[in-house]
Structure formats: C-alpha cells, structure tokens
Length: 360
Image (cartoon, rainbow, N blue to C red; front, side, top):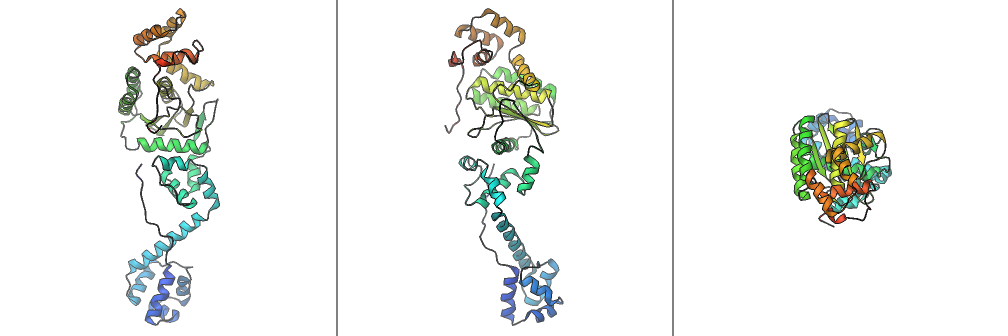
C-alpha cells in the first residue's frame, strides 16, 4: 500500500480574520463594507466571527469590493473548515480510544502507515488505511453486526487485529485483476496447486496465486499479528470475487497447504455472505468438519489414505514413498498422521519444510 505524505500545518487563518485585516487596510467599517457588497451587516459580522461561511456568491462580492480573487476567499474558507474538523477529531476521546486498540506499532514497522505523531494522527491514518471517513463508518463496515464472521469453535481473534489483517489481505490483492470466478476452473487450478506442494514454498505460492487468479480467486499471504491465532480466512469481496488469505502462523508447509485447501473448501461449499476465520485444522462444527474432510480428501483420496494407514508403518521411507505416489509433499502426510494421533507430534518433523518470515 502506497503511503501519502501530506503537509498539515497545525493552524489555519479564518476568513473572518483575513477580512478584518483587509477592512482595516481599506479603512472600511463592517456597515460600510456590507453596503458596498449589498449584504446585511449581520452577515458580515457573522463571517468575521466565524459563524457564517464564505459562499461562492459572497466570495465574488468580496473580490469586487476588496480586489482579492474569489478563489482565494473560497480556499481560505475551505482550509479553515477542514482545520476545524481535524481539530474536532483530535479532541474526540472516543476515536482516540478506538485507534489504540489496533496494532499500530506493527503497521508502522511494516511500513503500511507512518509512525503516528499523535492520537489524532493515528485515527486519521487508520481511517485512510481502512478507506472509511469516520469511526462510525468503520464500525458500520467492519463490526460483527455488519459482517458474518464465522470463527473456528476453538478460538476467536481480537476483532481489531483481525480486521486489520483482513484489510491487509484486501490491499495486497487490490492490484490483481483476476477473471470472474468459475467453479470448474477453480477446481482445475486446485489440482495443479496440489502438485505444487512438493515444490519450494514461496515460488509455489506465487504460482498458486496465478492459477487461482485465472480461475477468479485472489490469494494473499499476510503475516499475522502477535497473539493472533489464525491460519487462514476465506470470504467474498464481491459476488464474483472470492479471496483466500493465509498467515503461515505455524511455520510449516503442511499447515500452510492444508489451510489453503481448507479455505478453498469454504469457497466451493459454503455461504458467500460469511467470512470464514480458521485455525490450523478448523474446528469440529459441521461446516468446519466438512471443510476439513474436503481438504484432506482432496490432498489424499480417502481410499488411498485408508490403505496407507492400515499398514501401520509410519517411518521416513514409507512416508516418502506414499507422498511420491500421491504427488504431494511428505510433510503433509506427516501432519495428517499427527493430527489423527497416529504419529507423535514431535516425530518425523524433519520431513516438513519450516517457514520463516524474512524479518524474523
């Protein structure tokens, strides 16, 4: 996301103060100036006091009487009113409290926003980041009442960190121009992505993004925030614009790829009106269980898996051979065995690929 640096002075002269200076320079009283403009003395007094704005017709009259361009008067008026609004935001304790609940320092560290100079600056930058005009607008768009967040039953993320993470995913895919979503094309793309699980992770994810984009699905990898227990999410930005976001929170390729196919299941099987927020292996309610089963069966057909586990031989050579036969990464087989408690969590993790963010 490109940052915009703006010059924002902490003062703005009011049109009334500027008018007073010009009246004094011309030796005009309020009453005389009002007569020359054809306006009431009351209106001129209210403009001087900052109670009434300088409107276009008034600016034209000021131009004729005082010789100062009407556009300058309107510019002074606009700057003054904008400054007043910014000052009001700065004094809004509720907005400042709202801003403090976001991972602002982490956003600044990632270069998404500048380090806020004040509480009001934090509010202003966050509103720009989310693309909304006010805190009320943010609540209207991102609150649980306006979005059907569906969490895995085992956890819930902090709603402010979650909204920030989801917004980062939206921004990351904003420049992508995927085709309209087509289910058959997406399923075909998933078949190709499945084979990519054996490749180096980052190039494989980039290729997966291209394949999904051609089928109309946006894919984003976004680093999670501290204390966020989230592996992935799936939702629809528009009726024909689904998005999958991954966090790589567990730092291994088996979790990453299972999360990807789990989110793909939500796109294929479940409501377009919900935002599905998932942990490593989803949960145990009906929808999460369905997504888990679909992902597991897509990665390894159920009949093949049952044949493999029935042998009861879970060592490095047998796992590598089975993974080779299935065309998937051996770490995925290890993770599935561990999840089903057929293999201890600490055993054969050397067959997994460990993942780290560049700044770690």
